[in-house]
Image (cartoon, rainbow, N blue to C red; front, side):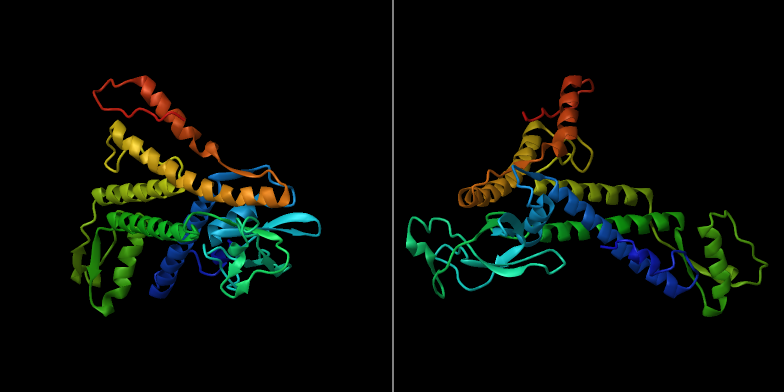
Length: 340
């Protein structure tokens, strides 16, 4: 994927023309969303690692499939085991809603695009579970579907929401910063545009003054205060941090739960509640991913296991332990770290 392409589509300069400025702002909105989305997707993918994964399986594609589609399919091909994105074909579900077939496809290149008969959990114990909407499942079962969570819901939708919220808040911060430097809006007739443009250009170049001969439109303008102040920047910064922490809670990893959005230390009960929420978010995903991997291990003779990537939590754990050892010199209530 050529992420650098947008850099060459729009001139990266602040021209005085309205069209160029409008295009540049649209590009900034799009580009900031793009880099925020990619960053959050990387965070989500790095929360889990697969232990005992065969060399024929790409861990990256496996985790990406779970996040993007809410499922992935393990299947045998040419004597090797593979895991690729796969979704139910709609050819039938049993009484528990388990599909009997999935359409499996390769990433981007179209080298594999085939239906795979799925092993239905418990069907070897009772043939009733092979009864699908369109009839009894027939043929050899050669695949296992692995779900990302209990609802079988793609986590990518959560990433999209937070990427939009965070990037939009960051652009709000950019705009607030812009108007903090330029606290007024000029109001004037169209005939004075050149004079106004010169004054604005001087402001953009950080000039402390603009020269006028007394006959230009600068002397005949109205100024409207934007009412932007430093507190606006602090409020938006706190909001961005709140979104970032909330997303990491959804992922089940190291959100900054020691502090609330006002920068005040939380009491032990509040921190414990946040840490429990983080653990439940991740443990729930691990539970259902491992259910699918257990079927793979049974069906294909592998020994795979999804485990939490604790490297993502090391900084926060170490920091909490350090804070607890420092004590409470200023009378501030400190939260005790959870035992990890």
